[in-house]
Amino acid sequence: MSDLVKFAPVRGMRDFIGDDAAVYLFIVDFLRDIATRYGYNFLETPILESTSVFARGIGEETDIIGKEMFSFCDRSENSVSLRPEGTASVVRALISNKLTQTLPQKWFYYGPMFRYDRPQKGRYRQFYQFGLEYFGSYDHMSDVELIALVDDALRGLKIDGIQLKLNTVGDNETRSQYKSVLVEYLEKYEAELSPDSMRRLKTNPMRILDSKEQRDQEICGNAPKILDSLTPEARDFFNKVQEALSFLGITYEIDHTLVRGLDYYDHTTFEFKMKKPDEEGTIAVVGGGRYNGMVQQFGGPNIPAVGLAFGIDRLMLACGSAAGQKGQAIAVLNVDDADQNEAFKIAQELRQIGGVSVLFPHQDGITKKLRFCDKSGVSCVVIVGEAEIKKQEVTVKFLQQVKQFAASTEVVVRIDAISDFIHKAFL
Image 1 (cartoon, one colour):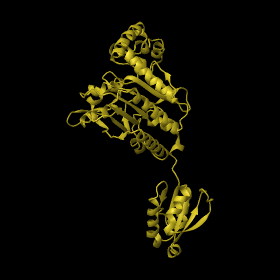
Image 2 (image 1 turned 180 degrees about the horizontal axis):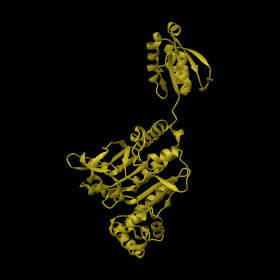
Image 3 (image 1 turned 60 degrees about the horizontal axis):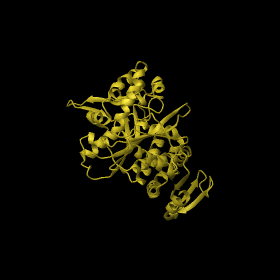
């Protein structure tokens, strides 16, 4: 085995370099700004948690717990797992940091998650999410606010062809009634179900609605709808969510099979889907819903909650490399070694402006420095030489057209005015 093969990334994991790194940062920065505008504060949880955190939060009968988690025993023989999603860790943080009496809490987080799944385009074993969790509100408008936030974000990212799929899984009484009706229907087709769905028929029948197997989907297409089993309270809650979305002009489509893949949801569930790039069909880029009982499952008080997660890997596919294009870049060049300190001091001053990248090339000779700037897409160079320093001036040469300056234009600017000049030229 060659060293190149031996040191390749683990299957289903990848490096972010160049355009990928730039697009990732662009999306995270954009979503962070949106979340802050909606009153969410940043929270960071560990990548590694006790396995029991996810088993309790996600549910023992889910595929995530049964098949997909990266779990192992540490040196103290404690079972730990790489986080497969963010919500369970955030609930654990809420309780362990004794914040259940300080409500509401609105948090956002982002970073890698891990699931042992079959890698494919837009799906990796180390994948990235941007999540938001809102604790402490029973009001349907907290659900609407999160959906509106996503709508804002996807419009701002200029992602076309987005569809909002909406459903409800009701309250506990609703689900109890519905499971009886659903099992009665599915038992007629038990022999035709996939092995996983046959198992779920005994443990968690609503999960069958979430199956990706074609025959399961065909059977579920004619299954009873949970909307027909809603209690008056659950129906009223769902109606209010729909009315508010319609009032805001946010279009949606009811998807009766949308139960989400995790056990902790109740009431509102939703997904934002987009067309697969260069392929047939759609994929979910955002998913979320309400999970009123989860904090109590962890031994905390009965606290309502609603949350969601953006799939950053899929957003990267939708945005393309153009989204991560850097802003204007300038370079400060010293002609000779004797001019280096003065030139670097000017570069440091220009870096205080913000909104523009300032390079300080280290190649030998002004010709090699200019060649580097041409290849790097630098918009203009500030040339600092002995003659300029004596006059307390610099020469600004534009390599690309910027506002009122054409490429190849040269301008002499006083050193004490260079920051104002660059600010007016680029910002």
